[in-house]
Picture 1 (tube, rainbow, N blue to C red):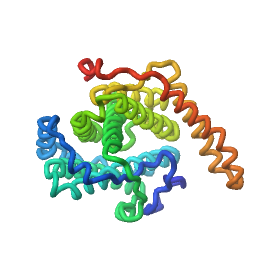
Picture 2: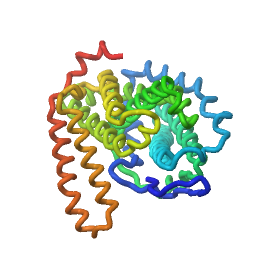
Picture 3: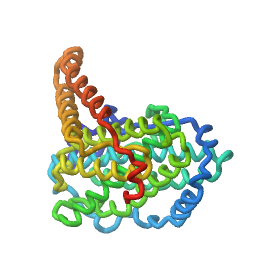
Picture 4: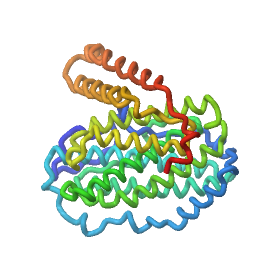
Length: 354
């Protein structure tokens, strides 16, 4: 991620994004397996969401209005750096979604034109988001070279089932991240230092719809939710996403402070809301009310911050490795203990969750 100070007069084009545990990944998958998926059990729901995407209610939303036509030199250096890092991470995440959806659509078009069309519209939405975020970065004289990233970024293989679990949660946690911040800034406009925040409400509609599509894909495959294995995978992906979110929010505490949010409270609310929403999709969710749940996640965030400080030190590489080891082991141990907390049966809650 961007680590140097970004001054108004500088112009920077980023070709490579520094990778670490929290950097958004680019994924590929088994396209033939996706093409052969039988989604007949959820066909009606998928058709309804396809029609919504065809209507394209947000087509005029991602346009820059007069609010963007001004100088941002008045934003202090700490806020500027934190905001640019937020934009860079968000843009990379949206762009990785675009690449995945576009490639799925292209590779399955001949065998499964229905799913191909759905993925093509989701790719359109993700491309809009990434482009809009990259344009926002240009207001601060920095941008991502998305074409270069497409050709030179390493890709991680995920089985189709893992893609469905992970993308569902990514879209739903994205919805809650944006809508909670949007509602907060509506009540406290003094913290709305950049007009992008005003776009978050409509942005959430895309995130939510994409999540609903992956919900339908998951529920169409009984093996993914009907059985012990499905419960284990659901808890694994929930914990992975929530741990990553907690570490990221605490790593970017300066940004949340700039918009008037407490990092701990924001992270907890997003996590709880996403967990509750996941009860509509997954057979089992996490017990976020367990007294050890958030303290253990926040302990992991503290360890991650300590590791970051070690990485920034001038000590030799092998010394850094030794210094980081106890923190890395502590993160792993706490994640294991979190996974062992008994989950909550979501099937019994399904009718009561919005």
